[in-house]
Length: 240
Ligand SMILES: C[S@@+](CC[C@H](N)C(=O)[O-])C[C@H]1O[C@@H](n2cnc3c(N)ncnc32)[C@H](O)[C@@H]1O
Image (cartoon, rainbow, N blue to C red; front, side, top):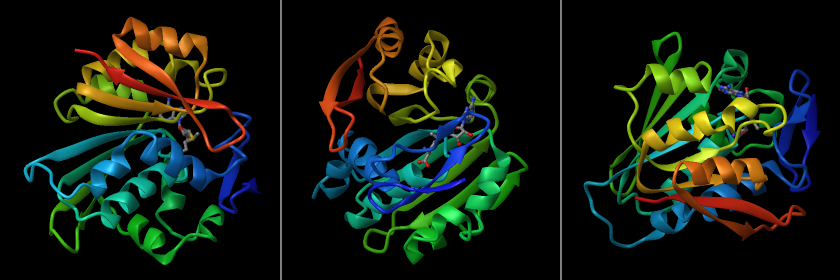
């Protein structure tokens, strides 16, 4: 069921999970302000100097309607493209990914053409692994967007050799109440194994159980102010 959020961007209501894919404050607003700006990724994209050999790797937990992944690409394209990028999106719902790649899904009606172009024509490596390559117009560096279809915990457990260590994690499953398996100690322990030193994890939930699970896996965290009705979001940093 389609819903317009308060910033005009469109989201869906998921009847199986009984939950919206995004906060009513704004699907786009949340993607840009919490994940892209709040994490410092946007500032990194705007830096004038960076190690030219750097590849920044991002884990997009719950690709969903694509807002976080596309906001990531948008930030990278807005900068000078001084680093290469890898986005690894994890998603168990094959149907939502198929719809996303049509660029004609109901929630994409309000999207810019550039966003619609970016979701089309993925290369199918296997039936559950897709890839798309982008080139930065200034630096000619590459951004690789990989989509891994399957249950997220299983994907991490079974793809040890194929997945990199992540610099940023967009932790955006449905809520701890409806998707407890993607918020528990085991999940954060798995994510920790796939994280670089000083990795940054962003999420909308500041629930006590989430903070405890992160702390047990040696992440420090702070609550950051939001631009929405919800007062705070969570920014976690992996401790060495
Ligand atoms: C809140 S939505 C994500 C919104 C998305 N990040 C965006 O920017 O549009 C949560 C997504 O997580 C997916 N999901 C839920 N449980 C999952 C699991 N165990 N493994 C993989 N994906 C899961 C759902 O299918 C849904 O698409």
